[in-house]
Length: 193
Image (cartoon, rainbow, N blue to C red; front, side, top):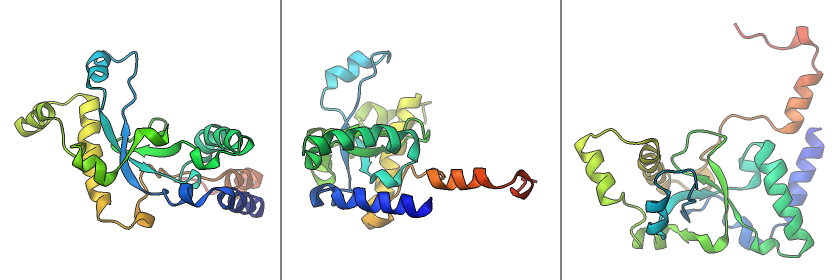
């Protein structure tokens, strides 16, 4: 099973154009998605150009299910069929998130700003009102906490080489590892103490 996985990974990564692979582990900023259920949606929508820190990842930097095996693979197959692999959306880790179910998303190439361009546009700083709350020690909403953590994480990663940047890499097993584990007799599985 591991050999099959390695061969599949090698084949897929080899098929990706250099411009796609060169972006893996690149920091930048992506347009913030507005949740229609969010009570602050109107304010966020008015801001329009609100960008948040993110890190572009390889599909093999994320858990297999559902991010890679379902969502990314569907996008990959559609792009391959239409011969547009070089135009695929970026798979990104949204800095600041600590929930593996909610930290990955797909960002259109045109909705991504480079790290340097984002800093020049002021995306690397907290909005003045949020900075005032942080300075005053006022309680922050969950979204505000994520925003503060996001910039802290990005600043931490800025000094690292791209290959050392790996956020959102929550512990996970690859498909073949879970299948191999399932094949072990129950008495031979490690027991937690």
